[in-house]
Image 1 (tube, rainbow, N blue to C red):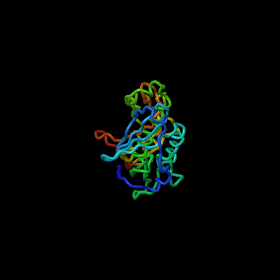
Image 2 (image 1 turned 120 degrees about the vertical axis):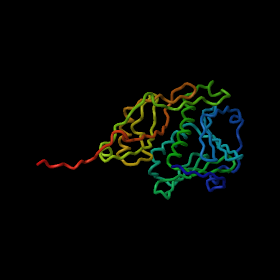
Image 3 (image 1 turned 60 degrees about the horizontal axis):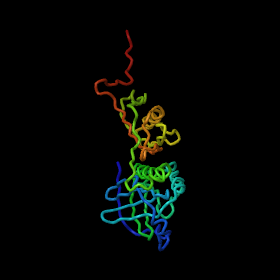
Length: 269
């Protein structure tokens, strides 16, 4: 479903960067811990959290490596609100300081695609094209970095190892209600849902979004199911955090119990 390309080039976004960035002595003393990484083809990017409670992205394609400017915690948290506009972008571009430029565009499929540009402190850039699912993965990674910066103690932020991240998981199996109309006509389908699981293990209703679905009936059924489902919350170094989750739902009719829809009445004589 996902088709992604990665490449390297200079981009107009680089003009937004400071021509020559010099790290301050304080910044040089920061301890950095890797929180999570995601991969899009040959392109790999990771979010790191510092002992000063800032975050940055470290990206690589083949042997080339790029380290973004530091981003303040509150600035990154505010930028993550673009998740609510992902399906219907309200702007031509979204920038996070001098580190990230996100540009939505109309894809050939009729859906929205995204050109993501990441920059370092000296105007080098890397770009990757992603679909809606890929954007969700990237924003989830960034959100996990923000959450780690918020909940880890000062001593934990100074540890030399990577952050221990466990993702949110289902607490127990759950079977959603099969859409009535789809069942009557014998249609199977699926829905890919995106939502936030909070620290209590529940899906946040306002965050629930359908990335893709065979028919609307299946996304509606998945949405209703999420309100009843229980999850084990995500954790960073033992601290519970809210996390963006993507969860596929499959609706399949039983092969051993075929449905005969809309039987024609037989008049008795």
